[in-house]
Every structure is written in C-alpha cells, then in structure tokens.
Image 1: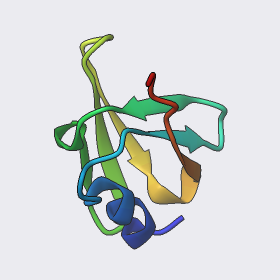
Image 2: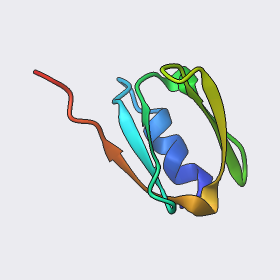
Image 3: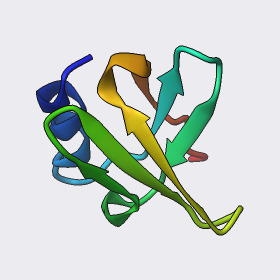
Amino acid sequence: MNADSVREWLNRQPFEPFEVRLSNGERYQIRHPELLAIGRNRMVIVDPSEDRVVHVALVHVNSVEALQTPK
C-alpha cells in the first residue's frame, strides 16, 4: 500500500475511524487523525491504550478498513 492510499483515509472529512492491518497480522485502530503520521515509505502509529509508538514500513500495510462504529 502506498502513502497516498493511507493518507486518503486519514484526511477524510468528516474523519472516519479506520483499522490498519499489517502483513504480520497486527491491527491498529486509528480513532483520531492525530494518532497517525505518514511519510513517504513509513508511518508512525500512536497506540494510547498501550502507551506506545509503532513505526511501520508502508510495504507491510495489507489493508485499511473502516471501523464499525456503534449507531
């Protein structure tokens, strides 16, 4: 996946929470646009529930999907 594809999700108006799925099976929920920063080849995900920061190469992003939000 390329940076523009992920950036498209990040910049949607209004923002729609989404999940990033990686090649190793890990999943990260992006519930706020400030939790993700995207570079050319890498991105940084802030996981506030675990109080950690994750650096991910974009080549390891398999998919980005909308989170099901309660109605």
